[in-house]
Length: 193
Image (cartoon, rainbow, N blue to C red; front, side, top):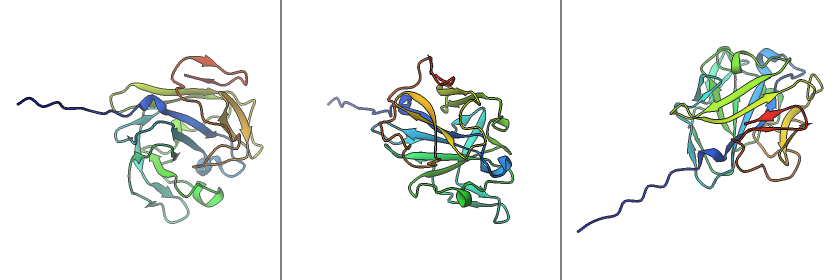
């Protein structure tokens, strides 16, 4: 008797960086965030994944509550949902200063700040899976969403500045693009690979 084993792997290329808050009006030390979106049909386990070389960890550290770890539930990002990644170290104020989506998966990095601090002159943000494969990369330029209470959001394959929507659908009301792992240059001076 021979058996057949089927192994269904999630389409990790469906995971994209969908929103970036790099220059908030509130303190940049505690209010920067990066949102990722699972545009696939399967849940994705983000255990041992990295953002700019720093490990993603479940929950968030609340800067305003004696730096306690909160919402330490999971690293599983369900299909069709968002994860909000914030600073580790002394924590974040994002959950108190923004209207964070109630279903957003809370994650933080094992470092004091996201990508060494999201610089206002632009930088590249990279997301890698547990094997070190580059899943998504975005290089942002400060010509958009700089100190104007806006975030960078992907809408119809282009980056634009909009009212922040951390952990929920971007304001563009269009479908987030499927696979953004290829090299492209956006007309808004933002590139995503």
